[in-house]
Structure formats: structure tokens, C-alpha cells
Image 1 (cartoon, helix red, strand yellow):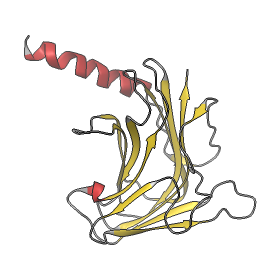
Image 2 (image 1 turned 60 degrees about the vertical axis):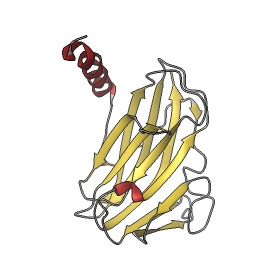
Image 3 (image 1 turned 30 degrees about the vertical axis):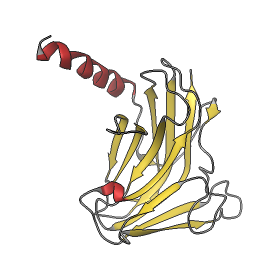
Image 4 (image 1 turned 90 degrees about the vertical axis):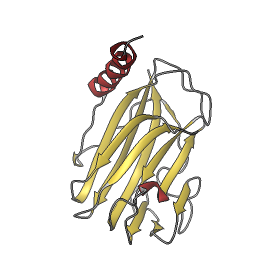
Length: 192
């Protein structure tokens, strides 16, 4: 098999994912979640004080802090604020992660959405990845544009293979640079 034959399917898969990504990173007007089975627990940060319930948080070497603010009156979502004190060459050393605990059949689409505010000079990564080494990524985003008001990020990614419950996770790698990230309404929904 030639290099072109081996790389060809990877390139086609990457182009297919890029073609089906619907990324919106604009000031928030309306954040509509498609109908489907929700896959995350506590994506609205209504449970837990300090660190959010049902999420794995990692801060190696005091890189930063996580703090949950309960929903304001009339709001459905609380806010998770991550303050990154110092960068790390491995940004996942400050991480927010949750496993997707449902069967994900090949050919369906996974909708991922959230709202965020981002301080100038800061950037973070969002991955939908397998939860085992070498941690292959089905989605990899890097968000770096400052956002002083709530901004929405929405993507739809095809499920590339049949995936068992807890085989993948949604992961935010946060220690690329010092700064502050506020996030709310994290959603993952399996759609047709």
C-alpha cells in the first residue's frame, strides 16, 4: 500500500468532518439545541459548589481554579469560571472532561454546543476524543478570539464508528495561556 493510499482515507475523513462542521462563534442571539438524547450530566452547572458535579476537573501543579456560580434569577444555567494562573506546555494539565455514557452508532451525528466568554490573550481547546491512549480525536477546536459577551459555539460531527458507552469524552484543555474562561450550557446530543 502506498503512502497516498494510506493517507487518502484520513484526508477524506478530515474533509468530510470539516464539511459537516457547523461552527458558530458569534455573539449570542439564540442557542437552539437540536432534539435528541442528551449525553452530558450537569452541563448547565446547576449542581456542585466550587467544582462542578459529574465533571472531571484536573489542575496539576496549581495551574488554575474552577468555580461554579449558581444560575442567576430567570436563567437555566449556572456559570463555570476557570481562571488559568500559568500556562503549561501540556494544556490538558488543566482540564474539564466528561465521558459520554451512551452508545453512539456509526452514521449518526453528535451535536456539541456551549456558550463562553474569553479574556484577551487566552485560548483553549475542545476535543471529542476516545478515552484511551493514544487519545484519537474526532473533533479538535481551538478558540482564541476574545469574547466579552456570551458567544456560542455549535458543531455537528459525524460518528465515525460504533462507539460503546464511556468510550469517548468531551474534553476542554485549558492551560495554553493565562486568562479567564467562563462557560455555560455545555450540551452534547445524539441526532439523526
